[in-house]
Image (tube, rainbow, N blue to C red; front, top):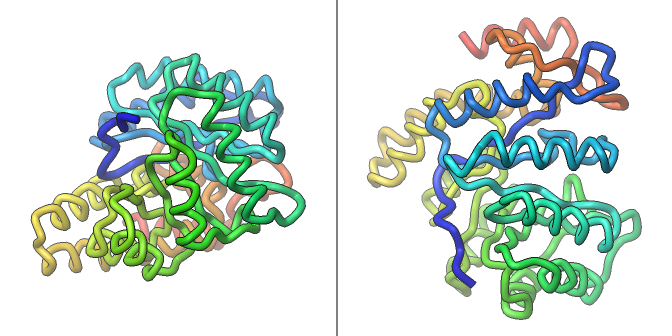
Length: 290
């Protein structure tokens, strides 16, 4: 299956809420998407963990998905996260995203019960059979509770024709080296503190919420890595590392929304049960942004 040229800095979007948290603020979402695209990111990824996709009703998820795809308008590729607790719901979301113009979908094997390898493979196969766009397999045990081995990932890639990309977020750089040694499937870094090592390992891109706050540093790091300028890449990476670590440890919805507020874009607070960033965190974030 042909895969769109998804590379570089892939910016995660937030999902803005009204002040009472009861409704999605699509106008603010549109402004945040325009800011990301105008900053120069190479692709947009709505409705992941930064976008609080797990905390939306089906109707809200549909609205955010359709609006995001319309707003991006093919200016850059869009990868919609369609993960859900059941295969049937993930299939529904994948079909919806494809019907509204998604270039690819991202799938995490999310489930309440720990899944066997056969169940994980069947999950991806069912989604793959239901759509005609590429799938980015997403390995993130911190959020899914499931850690897919490289062997399993490569089995899925071989078995499911439209699983053509892998996003690796375990924090183990050896996974990326193993993917490169044993397959030509494009892989993408999903762990902020590994950005420099991931590019050195051959990652085709970096999926991150950081461009909402520091897009130029992210883009410059990618360009330095492309140019094989290790000295510059190291300098750029370590300049942004304290902020990358902060937004990850503080929780992406809380830290990114607080940062956007500090930079003049009001997007509301995260939806409960996630708390907004506290006063001490906001002061620390101000210092990091400066």
